[in-house]
Length: 118
Figure 1 (tube, rainbow, N blue to C red):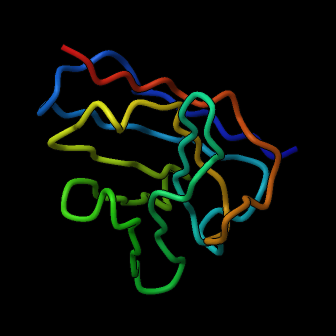
Figure 2: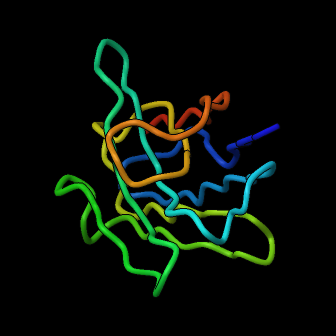
């Protein structure tokens, strides 16, 4: 059974940083691209960052490029999202999933809330 458990969200002031983690289980983690998504209130879920299985190549949404960094630890079946220079518009529930497309391969986890506010 696939499980995706996100953690690390919270309330942070503009300009601050957070590091999100996603612990994955139930599938061959190292063989899959892994992605972070986010969904703000009243908006559709959007793809934020992707890290591919081979070579660790990454892609980012234009809105976060240069501020967010995705990484993975295949030994721990965990994917991370380091978020720096946070802006109020980054406020959303953040989710991880396998695959690099607009929709994930597995059922969604509970997500982790990130709120950027002064």
